[in-house]
Image 1 (tube, rainbow, N blue to C red):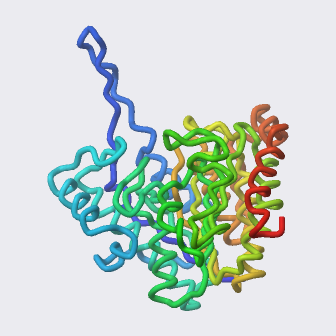
Image 2 (tube, rainbow, N blue to C red):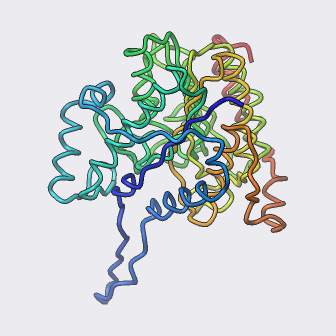
Length: 376
């Protein structure tokens, strides 16, 4: 069996988004509620992995902090300094409502460095595949701004490192977070050697996107120097396992195969899941496992199995850990004895059966936009 690396470090939890406090017109305050990007989700996921039996099939590698030079592969000095200084001052608001804590700097630098270290482990042949249970996530972060809950763009840093430092010819990034990976798209908009494929809920986040011609729309296919290397599939709400698997089969896998990367990176945000409070996509553990397995096979066919899976967002403490475990199972190619916690639930059964009638329209919009670049 091919060796798979796994990294989790409790120091990732130093990025604590805190609580939401709502003050009423009467002056009273409701009981504080943990923000949706809670440390509980990452902690519960790590506990589930540790008790699933899967660690026996994994090579556990230590986390490491990114160097200043590594952060500058993607981010500006000014932005890096802003994050460091705000965290040192005790935390506060960054961009777009992101709250950072005193420990955010240490967590974010550790997550970024771990993404690079796992990439090196794969490229050095220590392992064939790797999974990083990272926090904070990264795909909303652009070169000079944070976004969503992202601080440094872990996947982008791994990709740029692989090309510039390790001299890889081409890298592909597949992002299935329910929200559009606008930061990653911006970083590679004019780079013909990095393929960015993004599956996301149409018109959801960030603000001001949706529809064929806006951010994340099907006709956004890359800048003048890189036409066709940005692939956006804006999926209709509620298309579930069958919709995502059809998208992988009809668009994602064919494009990645034709692009022929030397490394495949997955931005794995499991907030498209059935129970997520922010998404409406109804994907189950079965869907996430099957998507990962499909892309593992693509990697085996085009880049000697080299695949790096990096955790992005998920907001359901009850279900996201199980979906992430399913992704890890798909990465390794092993099923544990852990079952879907909602097995037998009528909602789970229905979610697995869902397939929106407008899905084919969404896929066709992407296929039409890419017709001059890929044979789909």
